[in-house]
Structures are given as structure tokens and as C-alpha cells.
Picture (tube, rainbow, N blue to C red):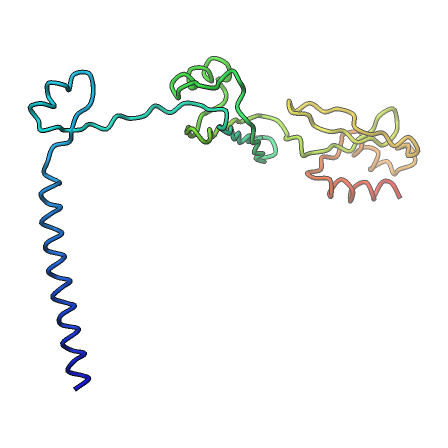
Length: 198
């Protein structure tokens, strides 16, 4: 008895599902075939003839004060990527995508625009030098020194170890320091310095 009731309930649900599916399909089929209502300057007389049709207007995307600019910089010499996230400058607020592309082409021709939205602008730049994450262990006035790399790829004197003249080192190590030893991170810098300063 319970099994028979279960089968009847299942069949009733199946018939109800198929009926509602067919009814919904027919209702949507009628709506899909209707023309949209147009809104705009030239559409007033069209609206009277075309049964209140509607056209959706595309909203133009502009840069707002809440837009973030994400710039990915690829350094070709070391093959590293650095990503910088900044707020927009006041100069570019309220620019459209077309205006911003023209602005970038005039002022920053080496930077490519990857994507543009009101929330975020994604930029990519390539530079043909080392990134600022590198250090060079070398010598300055006969002493062991550390040089950093700035944004333009130029090296600058960061620190001199005045108590450690290179004349106390082996000749091979002195030549390495005169040429400069390039390291990729602060951890590697500490490891290499330990060999010379101990």
C-alpha cells in the first residue's frame, strides 16, 4: 500500500513538472519575440508606432576617486616582476577610457594599458635594468660596501663597513668585490656578507 502511494505521488510530481515546464516555455517564447522599447532623441515617433519599445543605453566608464591603478613592472635584466597598487591622481579623475588612453600615450608611451574599469586600471611596463630588490656587494675607498639599486636601475652607496678593508681578504675575493657581487634579496645579502665579515 505504501509503495503504491509512493509511485502515485512520484507520477503526480512528474506530470506537474512537465506541465509547468511547457507552460513556462510558451510564456517566455511570446516575450522573446517582442521588440524592445527605444528611448532616445530619434525614438519618440518610433515609440508611438512600435508599441513602447525600449533601448538600453550603454553607460560610459570613467575614472573615479575610488579607482585603483595596479602597475606591473617587468625588469628584463633580472626577469623579476613588481606590482604596485596606487590611488588615482587628481589629474585623471573623471577621464573616460578613451581620454585616459590618449593621456597615457602622450605622457607614458612605454606603459601599456591591460584593462580598464571604474574599479581598477591594470598597467604593464617593461624596464631594461635590475629591479630595486637587488643589492651589489662591492668596495668603496678600499672598504667592503653595499650598493642598492634605485627605481631607474642606477646603483647607489647604501652602507660602508669601515672596519673591514678588502686588503685583508684573499686576492680572489678582492677581485670579486671590485667587480661587484650581485645578490637577489636581503637574505642572500646576509649570507654572502658572512663570508667576508666574520
